[in-house]
Image 1: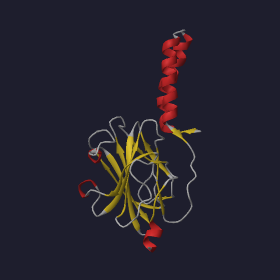
Image 2: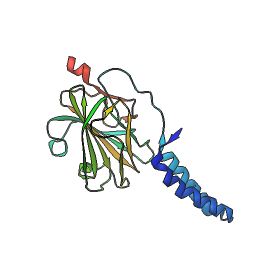
Image 3: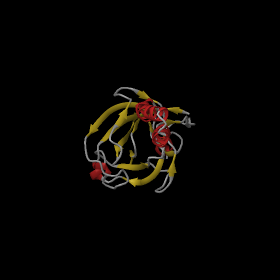
Length: 212
């Protein structure tokens, strides 16, 4: 399994002391640092995913548990009327973020903020990165939202770039949340409490809903 390059400094910061401590026969401390390095390698793991190929699909942008699935609160959503899916990522979940739709990036807004727990209902006040995608004429917005432990957002896409469905777009470090905002008339295929898999679990089908 691959490890995202953002994790290499963390792994090295744990493994190098572990080797040095083992060389001086301080095996207890060496084991602690080695275990920390193992956790970092696990956290930054980047597994391949089987992304569905049907046009118009919306897939989960991350692994985790669905916290919100329904109408978005106007005070905490982008301007307009939306259907929202919010996903909480625990420190044990894969933290690679993926594009929920195929399309062109039209806008990226970074907003500083608080560092409340990502599962808190007020997490929309946290530091976040809001990404707008033109998905074949339909606006879809997704947010990378930091948590109490996640203090850095990694975003590897830019305005004007085309992204594929389920394409890797970045990550957040150590516990976080992903929000997806879809047109208000879209029917969701997930519910609160459901565990989802980034790039694989289908949240909705824009094409089918438009046809209906």
